[in-house]
Image (cartoon, rainbow, N blue to C red):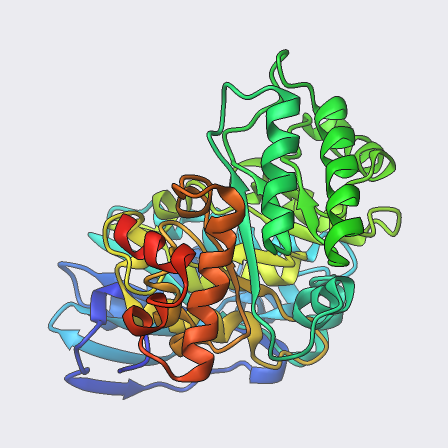
Length: 429
């Protein structure tokens, strides 16, 4: 399988590679990678993008200054896929940024908050990737727990799979019903539970009472199983109250938190990750991601993944291998493998983010995801666990039995003949 480099060029090879002189030292620059399609000259358009993303055109009355020249990004490589279509590589000098003040925000403004997605002198544009010099990585918090930290919290070995679930239905549940679902799932052996993204704390299911009851339920389950379970309720506070709400939730007993930084803002994720009093893993929800990453003017999933990891996301949903009837994110296997790589490869002091396979995960396609990702992912199955005809506990058992079948090298259907929970689960799909 080829390595993912962008939807627009998947399965294609460049016709020509043009290498250009750059005035900038790679160790003092950010490398930016964009796909563009234009009706104008490709090289000229690439240089205009580099210019407009930093200095813009010189408008002084005197001669252009050396500082202005040094501050302007330039193009160092172009891969042509057609006469006016290609991937452009830009170096943007670090000297335009202030690492001591909000570097994440500055990075986003430099790369996507400026005019690059707005101008009309090209028809299509995608921000595909970026690379940062080592010297500025320490200015980002990164995840506080990641894969190894999560395993430590749960008392799991390095090769044990983390299976979790999602509280569904997402509305119309009392706090008692939520707690009971969590209790049954914990008895079955899940190690992580999160709220559905549409569970928003209405009057009939208030947050504090829900959290306290779920915490009590998980303690009762622990007394029977001896297994820790992380619970991440949906953090729904307004920006000015988000930090205080998170601290309160921890006081009420939560062991993780979930919110959507693609909607609330990456800066709020960074704020929570830096707060020493918020000492629980942060689940960054992916809702709305395809609105960013698809279309003729877009930000690629790879870019979002890198930004989330820098900002401090401990967990993020990448999609599901073998599931083409749920989320757009799951349609490109090459992308899923690339996202897993982005979240788990060595990044010079930045902790890894645990990739989450969710969005149609079930006992049948779990094996395909284990084959693709090994044990370095979290498998979250919502409906397939909670709708199991034999009950929630049986739904969890079926997922674990599917993992056992793979580990033992026994075909799923064959193994299911001795496992009624798995057999029933396979009949559901």
